Image (cartoon, rainbow, N blue to C red; front, side):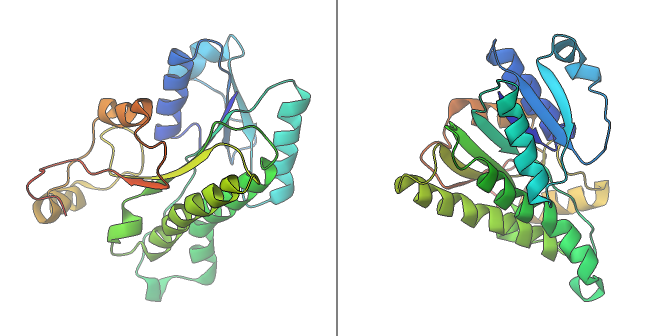
Length: 236
């Protein structure tokens, strides 16, 4: 079984579908903040066979994360991988952000990472994958909190690999700093996209490219992997 946070978002759906298509006996648990969320659309065919299930999971509550992991064990599911895709944005210049708004952006990625790791520290995971963003490295106007949250993920992957080297965790940890996806992931308006293309040479990454990066396993052995897509002569 594989746990995908933010599993009904764009990237969550893409990776859930990919796992289900390529691992015949896999089951996927997708989580979100809503109390009841039907698994529909492209995942419905697997939901009908009980290979996909939805669970509400407030990532900022450690006891709820621990309870979910325990319930999966009680149901006989061997959790082998975590894909932490959850995140949110609340774009505004930092001088205009309230403490609550800043903390709200940090919570899914920062607290979610901590609570997921602590709840699964005794499990025999294959991987613990954190979906970060290139904004952790490049920054972006109005996204100081988002950059901070992703930067935490990048450092935590290295920290957890250090724990694994001491026998305190199992499974390789990696933070992947994704660029913009053509389908799925965070969305930006057309003017911002045009500016990124003009100033940095960046273009939205096709789904096939992103899934190939995951499938190829180039992330194994790395603490952090930053992926760029666009004009290779101008990417910065």
